[in-house]
Image 1 (cartoon, one colour):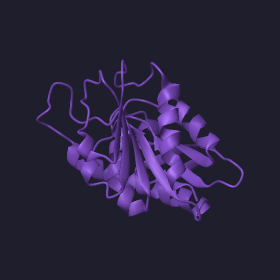
Image 2: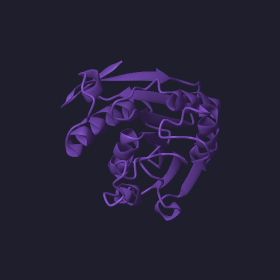
Image 3: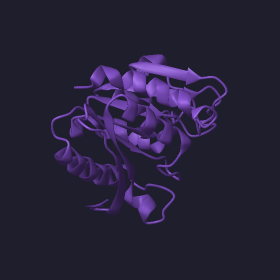
Length: 197
């Protein structure tokens, strides 16, 4: 399905379960897509615990751009997408998340959309080699519990455990979390069970 936003059309792939107990809305990183191995594994695991899952290709990626541009405009488009998805599932808790840049969007907008939690896969704490440009405030400012799943070899850094409700660091994983995506899915599914209706 497509949802029109102020930044153009966003594309949404929906996987539903009968009698959903939760809605999980996920999105990609800056240059990636919703078929990234970790996002697919999370989708599969979430379906197994009773969540309907919407994977959103943001408008900037549908338009062919590799970078999201200004955060406020990206967030504005995200809010429209989530609002329309909430209209379809109004009576179940919302958890939103994503990988890398998508995790940043989920943190920045969690309070506005009424999410009960955020799933942050490979949250990019700082640009590679520039730890002084920390984005930890986005994690701390989410206003809801945040699960962060990071690889111990991620050049974008690993958040401080104090900046998230739960931090899981997977050995041998880089920023792409593709060495053992099923493990990523297991961690997220365990987290989601506490928020089901």
